[in-house]
Length: 338
Ligand SMILES: C[S@@+](CC[C@H](N)C(=O)[O-])C[C@H]1O[C@@H](n2cnc3c(N)ncnc32)[C@H](O)[C@@H]1O
Picture 1 (cartoon, rainbow, N blue to C red):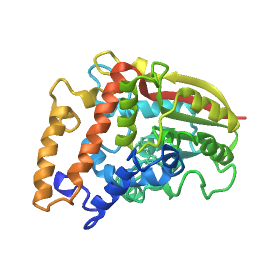
Picture 2 (cartoon, protein in one colour):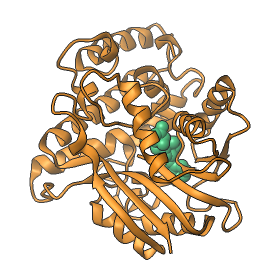
Picture 3 (spheres, rainbow, N blue to C red):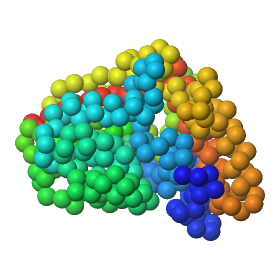
Picture 4 (cartoon, rainbow, N blue to C red):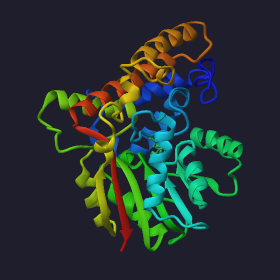
C-alpha cells in the first residue's frame, strides 16, 4: 500500500477524525469507564482496525502478528513458521474444516490453508479487513479453501460442531475479561475432541500492578492496539477450562527468540535496514513527517497523522513491555474440547 493511499479507501471526508475521536474518548479517564471498554470491546476493536489496518498493511504486511525469529531469518519467513507451528500442533489433516478467530486480512489463513490443505473460515467484525481479505485470497488463488464470515465472534451464526479444529492468532486478546464467553462459542462450534490453538497477548508474572511504570506500559499497549484490557495467562487457561476445554499445553514462546532478535526487534530497529525501514523508530519518524505534509495538502484524510501517533504509542509500549519482560504476545495455548 502506498503512503498516499492510506485511509482513503476505508474512509471518506471526516470519517477518520470522527472515528478517531470516538476511539480516543473511550480511553479518556475523565469520562470513560474501564468496564465499558470490556463490554464494548467489539466496537472498540472494529473502530481501531478501521483506522489501523492500512498502516499495518503499509508497515508490516498481511500477517498481523509477531513471530519467533532467529538470526539470519527474514521477518516474513519467521511469521510464516510461527503460523505453521500452530497448524502442526493442531495436527490439521487434509480436507478438515477449521475456524480462524479474528482472521485479520486473511494472511495467516492463506498460509495455513496452503500448508495443511484444509478449508478455513475466517471470522472478523472488521468489514474493511474482510474487504481486503477477499482481494488477497483471490490474488493467492485460494478461494476454494478460504472464506470469510463477518460477525462478532461472541455470536457466530453457524451450527454446533461445524469445525474439526479452531485457532486464533493474537486475536482473542480483544476479548480479555470475556474470554470464557468466547471460548464457549468456540467449544460449541467444534466437534467432540476437536483441538483449539491460540497465541495470546498477556501480562507475565513479572508485571506488578502497583508499579506506575508497568501500569503506564500496559495502558500504552491497550490504547495503541484497540484492547479493552490485558490480563494474565491464568485468564486464558481458566477461561478455557470453564468453557469445556482441557488445556494440553501453555508456553510463552518469547523465550525461543534469539537474544539478538526478540519478537519486538522490528519495532526497536536499532540496526538500520531496509527491511525494517517502515517499522523502526527512524522509519516511523520519517513517516510521521511525510504524513503531516500529505495531510496538510489534503492528499490523505484529516486525522491520519494522529492515527500514526496512536500506533507509535503501541510500538513504544510493546518494546518497553518486551524489554522488561512484563508482557508477551506469544503465549501459545493448545486445548481439546472435552
Ligand atoms: C491483531 S489482529 C490479528 C489478525 C490475524 N489473526 C493475523 O494474525 O493476521 C486481531 C483480529 O481480531 C479481530 N477481532 C477483534 N474483535 C473481534 C470480534 N469481537 N469479533 C470478530 N473479530 C474480532 C480484529 O478485527 C482483527 O482481525
